[in-house]
Amino acid sequence: MRLANISNRLTLINRNSEIIDVSEETGGLFSPRIEECYERWDELLEVAATLGGITGRPLAEIMPEEFGNPAPQPRQVFAIGLNYAAHAAEASLAVPQDLTVFTKFVTSLAGPYGTITLPPGTVDWEVELVVIIGRGGRHIPRERAWGHVAGVSVGQDLSERTMQAAGPAPQYSLAKSFPGFGPIGPLVVTPDEFDDPDNIELGCVLNGKEVQKGRTADMVFPVPEIISRLSRVTPLLPGDVIFTGTPPGVGVGRTPQRFLAPGDELVTYVRGVGEMRHRMKAQR
Ligand code: ZN
Image (cartoon, rainbow, N blue to C red; front, side, top):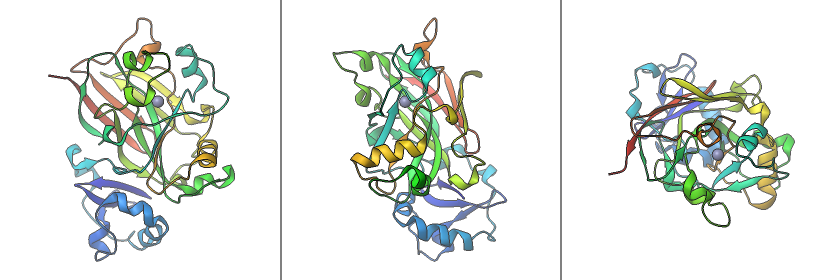
């Protein structure tokens, strides 16, 4: 199943890539607000199966500005650092023995298209697979972890490296939480849509040049391990968002280093989900 937040409405995409307004087609059984569907995930899956025959506007006709963040109101946002060995190496850091966890504050989350304002400093890109929780839980075993996932999406963990590295301890959470620094979208795709949800290609392209390309099979802690370890400490809640870490190719690890500049266009993709497209602009 594929979902989107189109014109601020919960939208299902059918097998013919046409859009279906879930609230309208269910006579108001579901709220148009996509954030509310994660709380009723099992019910949504059942209802969605009955809506498959309905036709609608082609997805391809939807304008970029109509797409919003498909996980706009998570109660918790987790982000995993150094989750690909080759990225840890380019950052001159050791591969972690346990999860390195920070948050991106919710005001940093944004939609899949548009402009991102660059604060002063050195802003870097990080393509990431984003996981959205459907069924919550605590002490979730690895073997059942994918069953707690509503779907996956494309994410960018934009990071201001100067602030991140200042001070005696890293400032991950704050330096990665400027407005617009956590775009997600355009679709949410359920894990069953992938041949292997633990081996998905992801990447990003800066001004037409590929800068990152990886596979989630190279994660130090795969998605089921992340869910299992996080939920040993904190309950996971429906609608929670997990940024799962970035593969190599970020700007800070390049020689010479390269950071985002006004006018740059950043395209971020996850194969099987789609791509996001953002233009950088100067803070004025
Ligand atoms: Zn990251």
